Image (cartoon, rainbow, N blue to C red; front, side, top):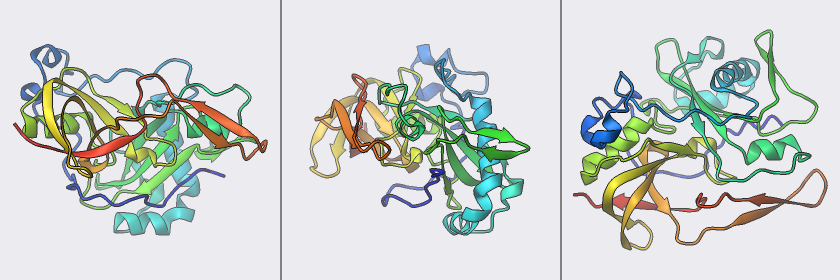
Length: 290
């Protein structure tokens, strides 16, 4: 399978985000120490992806465009329904910085089928825009993908899977799938008054969720009060995750240490380790303010 998932997983009641990727002057939303490390345009200088990946950020852009040009016509009806208007897949262009979504899962055996290595590994998230600049498609590219670009089109090796996930971006939501790290920090700080104390990190969601559900991990300079939406429990936290369309969440109290999944290739099982200190289960919360 190509691994192009076009179905929506769940409903969200958080506000849409039609604003651009930049969140304006961030100096009042970050600590003085972090303010001195901002890029000249006032954006975060995100950590570079680790070495040893098959795909780098520039390669992710090329793969995203080639995949959309190759398979976009087959998915066009669904993409346009999600987006809300026609999409000319051959005229889409890169719309923003490429974001690297790291994985909470540990390494798998070297001889595992590529679909598992891709499916539990990190992804790059790329926005593609129409000629008017409006984001039309968001596509996730597996950082371990072995796909190649030949004459502007995608080619796959004999064994592949979970290399790409794409989805139409609804009109009016802009760069909200996920937000930019600058937007994520500003939203927390405006409500709580707390400042970001570290450069945000993007983490992909648990297996079974679309990569656009990746969350920015934001560490604050002091604890803030949050209320769990389900139980109503109030707790003080310094670490908040900001996900799709600006939804806030915190790690659940109980986290698995590993997963056991069926191996559809061999008929056995795949044991997927979870990296220490990396949550995969979350609870949605509301910020209680200053």
